[in-house]
Amino acid sequence: MNEFMMNILCMKFFTSIATLNVKKAGYFLMPAILIWALTATGCESATVADDLNKKVVTIENKQIQLEITLAGGMFTGFVIKENPVNPFAWALTTEQMPENNKPFVFKGHFLCAGRWGAPTQGEIEAGIPHNGEVNSVVWDITENQVLPDGSHQLVMACKTSLEKLDVKRTITMPDEGSWFYVEETFMNHLPIGRPVNFVQHVTVSSPFLTSDMLVNTNASYGFDQETGWGKYEDSYFSWPAGRLVSGEEVDLQRVDTQTGFVTSHIFPETDSLGWITAWNPDHKLLLGYIFRTKDYPWLNYWNHWNEGKPYVRGLEFGTTGAGEPYGQLLKDNNHFFGVPYFEYLDAGEYSNKSWLSFQVGGDMDIAGVKNISVVGDQLLLEVLKTDGTHEDIKLPGAGVYFRSE
Image (cartoon, rainbow, N blue to C red; front, side, top):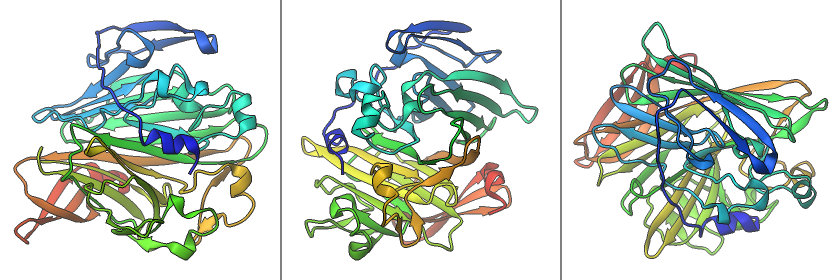
């Protein structure tokens, strides 16, 4: 693991949400000498705050509210209105960020595009930020509308001047329901083909994260990031039975292990859908993600405690489980049991990927999520209760996007 990834495990978070209702906002970004105009049209729930790292747009329905920063396009708020506990309160300070990322800061669920991890020394000197340029530019709102079926659709986009890897993101939220669906298009505007990676960097923290939180997934084979390049297949394990380089065995479902670690996992070949959930019994809230494994064949999972309590838990799904420079990835050992560590985009080529996130609240006693499947237009969560019985939780309408799977 590179030095910055090790340091990030020890960094502190803060939450700061201050908004004011506006129709238009423009601002001058001195480090990049860029002027951006941001327009939100016809949406009463569009809100923007005063300074760079506080400018947000919010969309909501009867059950939930979602907040996304315009600086870096990061998901920083996702709450059920009747029980507003935010899983995405984690954030770094400007001082804690790599130099090429400043003044932008990593928060909540952010996108790594182009790369996962640190750039090479040559790339740093060329101005490339950590985890890609998309989280170090201001995103534009291109559409903000209510569709005929009553669902809310927000379209955001960003252009990168150095990497020439642009993103269009479409967020759809139903009129009723505690979920939202995201489709992203990644476009290579270089005149040559390139290796690329895309990782959804989901970082859960307090107040949602507590020591008795339970994490479930259908991910399987994995390895400790400390294993060393080229040795991953020789020391693999299978979720939830983790084994660290130190020899310590950990139950990956639980967050009461105080040892810091990062493990990376693939999904079974037979599973066309990948999923991960986090259940907090104190707040009676279940957070989850579901996605196609052809889009995101990897799960990266990290743990850090601070001052005797869990500090952050990373639930990152993406196209890679190796945060190495492409010079290393292209040499050899560039796959784990047949699953590659990167993708390839030709000149002018684009790639579409999607995922869905949900929260479920209520008076439940969950001992684990056993499976998530598509039944008609619903997502069906098969839940094991603490009394040993099973219960099915249904998310109407959410299965439409995955019916072909």
